[in-house]
Amino acid sequence: MTKTIDLDEQARDILKMNDRGGYTIPTKGLYPYQWNWDSAFAALGFAQFDCARAWAELETLFSAQWADGMVPHIVFHKADPGYYPGPDVWGGTGPIPSSGITQPPIAATMARLIFEKDQTLGEEHLRALFPKLRRWHSWFMQWRLDRGAVCVTHPWEAGRDNTPEWDAPMARIDPTDVGEYVRRDTQHVDGSMRPTKYDYDRYIWLVQMGRRLHWDQQKLLDENPFRVADPTMTFTLLRAQRDLLAMGQMLGLDVGGITEEIEILEQGAQTLWNPELESFDARDAHSGEWANCVSNASFLCWYAGLDSEGQTKQLQRVLDKVQYGVPSHDPESDKFDGRRYWRGPTWAVMNLLIGLGLEERNHPLAERVRIATKTLIEESGFSEYFDPTDGSAAGGQGFTWTAAVWLSWAGRT
Ligand code: GLC
Image: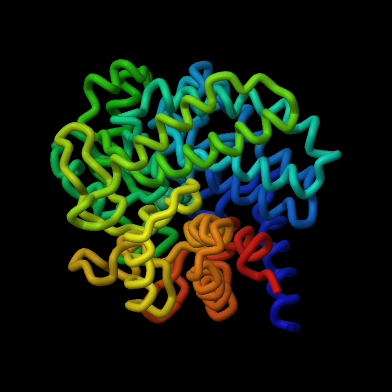
C-alpha cells in the first residue's frame, strides 16, 4: 500500500518536473521538446489530478497544427542544441517550428477520457478542440490511406522507430548522399539500446527529402520510397474517429462524414490481417509485401473496437513466452532483441492502449496485461521502456508517459 502511494507521488512529481509550462517534455536531455502522442498520454496523466492542465497540454499541441490539418510529431517551442535533428534540419512549414511528420492520433481518445473526468470543465475545451481534431483526422483520410489502412511515411511516424516491420522498406533507401551529421541520442543513452547507424542514416535521409519537397503531401506521395500501411496508425485512427463521433454527437456538433470514414477504416483494418502469419501485420504500400511481424501494434485491434480470436491466440503465446509483456516484437522471432528499443522491449504506453481495448471488451487477458505493466513500474521505476525477459529498466528515466500510465491505469488499486 505504502509503495503504491509513493509511486503515485513519484508519478505526479515526474509530470511536474517535465512540465515546461503548457506542455510536457518526454524526459530531460534525450527528448527536450513537445512530442505529439507523448503529450496526449501526459494529458491523461494530468487529468488524474488537474484537468485544466490536461486540456492545456492538448491545446498547446494543437497550436502547432499546420494549415493542411497535420499535427506535427515534435513541436520545437524553445531551441535546445542538445537535440538532433532540430528545427533547421526539419524545415517544418507550420505556425510554430516543428517536424514535418505526424504521430499516432490518440489525442481524440485522450480528450474523451479527460472530458469524462470533469464534463463541466471539459465542455468548453472540447468544443474548441473538436474542429481541430476533425481536420487532423481528415488529413489522414486524404493523404495516408492504402486500401483503407493508414500509412506511415517515416518510421518515426508510427512512434515505433526501429521495429522490424520497417526493415524491408528501409533497405530500399540508399542514403549515400545523406552527408555528415552528429547524433545526440547516443550521448544520453547507451547505443546498444538505440537504433543503429544504418537506421539513422535512413531516418535523416527521409527528413532531408521531406524538407526538399517542403512537406508537400502530393509530392511526397509521388517520391517517397517509404510508405507502409501500419496497424498503429490504422487502429489508433479508427478508435479516434469513433471517439470523435461520440463526442460530437454528445455536444450536438456537426459529425457529417465521420460514420463513412469509420467504415472505410474498418475495412482497411481487415486488409492488415496477414492470413499466413495469423496476425494483424504491416504491409508495404509500394510492393504489397507483408512485414511478417507480430508486434505490440498488432494487439491494438481491441482498442480499435475489433475482436479477433486469432490475435487472442497470439497474445496468449507472447505473454506465455516472456514474463514482462507485451513485448514490442515477437519473442520467438530471430529479430527479437530485448533491449533495443522497438525490437523487443515492453512499452508501458502500448500496454495501456492494448489494455484499455481488452478491458472494454471484457477480454480474459486484460488484467494480465495491466498487472504485467504495474509490476514493471513497481520493480523498475518510470523508465522509457523495459526488457521483457527480466523486467529491467531501459532507455531514458523519469519518463512522462510511463508516469501517466501509472496514474491513469497501471497503478489502479
Ligand atoms: C521515441 C519513440 C516515440 C516517442 C519519442 C519521445 O522516438 O519511439 O514513440 O514519441 O521517442 O518519447
